[in-house]
Image 1 (cartoon, one colour):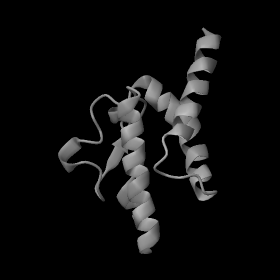
Image 2 (cartoon, rainbow, N blue to C red; image 1 turned 30 degrees about the vertical axis):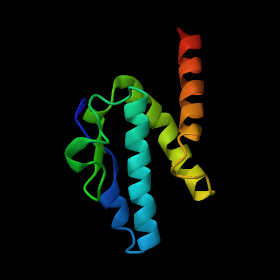
Image 3 (tube, rainbow, N blue to C red; image 1 turned 90 degrees about the horizontal axis):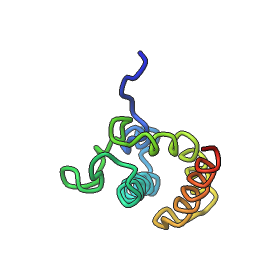
Image 4 (cartoon, helix red, strand yellow; image 1 turned 135 degrees about the vertical axis):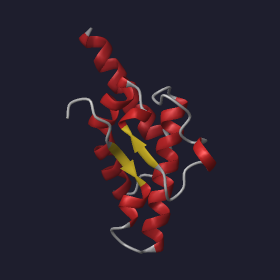
Amino acid sequence: MVGSDYTIFAVSFRHMITADEKFWSKQLAIGCTLAKFLDTNDLAVHELSKVEGGVDANFVLRKSDVTGEGLAFLKKQLDPWLKSLDRGVDVDDLRPLERRLKKFREANAAMK
């Protein structure tokens, strides 16, 4: 269905892969960082980090939660950012996401 809502990221889905506590903590941190980044950069349609108690095991980021720009950014940059975390980038550091967003916005401005 064209235009239907879908899940972009869910802490609980990623947790089901393993019961390893270290992995679980990292997935929760990813959800927190992602929500904070989207809120801070006006890429969310409502405050994600403060929705019903904040980011927890039930946190789900859906297409309907982000702006058009936010969705376009996540489509291009979410997987590369997640892979960078596997290589040791600090999950709590927003700067890598902010650098990616700056380049994304510059590229989009150049296309106009």
